[in-house]
Length: 272
Image (tube, rainbow, N blue to C red; front, side):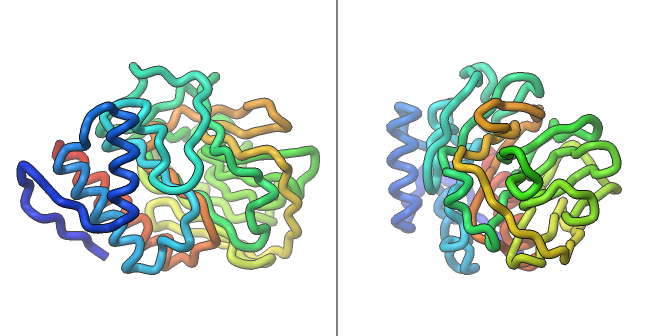
């Protein structure tokens, strides 16, 4: 799908009530009223999620591009805001988003992993760059002490795994993964819609897995830019994150729609 934005103007009046509430919170965090381009981009994005029946499926949205400041970027567009661990104001870029350093910086998304529906969940990240094509890095996830407790969207997995969505298993062959066509930027989504149905989507290239798994996620919150291993952050990513979402399981068609909406929002913000 394609979102058509109106011609840029000096002012814009949003109409979506959730967009208005988020923009108000953003104004407080940034200590400045969002500009017309940001207001229009947010309003259009929220309306697009709703008109495509995605709003109720997405529990958390972080818009890391668009806000004026790091404080604004760390204000959730929907759901719980993250807890910052190591990011400074100098890291943030209004258009390109928030880059990790691949070594120590991460966010907690402040959502108990065991509150996530074990048979219906997704994570997605959209990045302007920095997605690893070597090493073992995690975009978002949590892990306890068993295969069934692993919940992660890998920017790059262990040798031979590559981009992967590991939902209740780290056993090779039991989760979807992509090994070709990988780049440093774009949209990456992992989704489970049933005990035996999971897929990964990288910029429209998808892989699925029908293994039957039974996740038992830990209490601790998933970390963003790293894996929460029983309260310790590991496997840090240097991705430059522009949009993050978490919620119920998405179909491949719904993932494609979310990808299109994210890209349209980012394109609008690039005009600032």
